[in-house]
Image (cartoon, rainbow, N blue to C red):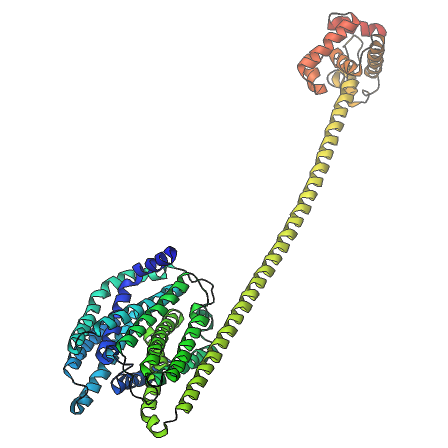
Length: 571
């Protein structure tokens, strides 16, 4: 229960100015026109006046419904201030009019019509301020408003009639004080996101343009309102006066039903404002018929249940107006007028019909059968429509999930195909890199082999007397040997090259030199420095130095000159 209370209080802190404003307006209307519910109504002064007001609203709807223009805020504020002033004046005037005096009955009826119109416009203003609220906030708002208003009206019923009207005028004017705080908190109402629950707000958001859904809601609410209007004057059309016990029972019953529905709402029961609330209203209507039949001489017993039914119907009408105001594309005042016509207009028409038709028929069995049939029609039309709407919601949600899954699968397939393509490209790049590396390595090996062959082919050619002049002019000694060819005209270069090559090989075999050492010996004998030997064989200078030391050690020699002389001895 602590969680329930905290949930209710958290929202009360947001919409309390709007709540106080609409409580003041409704309480003033009940006090001024309904006699503080000392009876079910005041006959022509209540439902008759409301029927005239709803006729005006219906005419306005027929003229303005096609337009989608909304009233500017400054026009709304001015209209609200004018409505407050007119309602306060009518409340004071009604306190001075004796409704039982036939001489002033016309004036009293006119004042009741004007007061009903002005206070209805005031309630429209406060319902408009709930635009954008979530479904739980809107439902708590309307049920809190009626629970508190019923308690206040019950307390005022013990005061004299004139004092009640004066208090009503004060409450009307007090609305002006609440305009500022309400405007400051209006932005906080939209902070709670709408849940995807099966509530009336969900259906209103999804099926606002579904004419079948709108007609079903209108038929269901209209049928219950018609039953409510008949039962308020059961059975002969005259108002049913309450006794103190039944007046208290009605007050406690209305507060208990509103509190129970608020608890269910805060505990997130999804179908409270669709199936549950209609079951409650139909149960109260059926209970009223049973009580009227069980206590034929005490109509006030059944009247307590009827008045509780009236409270729930009115609260649900306000809730539907807030829902349509939040999701519709028309001005909020148009939706409020439509709700008033469907709920209070049909109720007032039924009440006036019973008042003037019953003396002609007097058939209680016919009336009971008619009311029972209307309750059944309301149950069938509304509940079946809500079930169908819920089924469509489930189907839409399933289609949405399937579409999302199909989209996710298609995206996953695209991602897999893209990854496969990337993998194939990476594999191709790797193969190409391996091929290029192999070609580069082969080229490097070929270049190294060629360099090695050139190094092995080079030899030291010492210039001696008798060299061919042509050889001397050909360039540096050994040039032709490096290129692998003979000097022009043959001569000693070619002979020395072959002789040197054989001498190095024989020297290597004699002293057991390795192939690498033979390569080093060849280049060293040609006169290359250790650094040049290292560059030619692609080894480090330190490695070249090591090879030369080993050659000296194996051959037992100590200088390049000794090696050259030894090679010449072979030649």
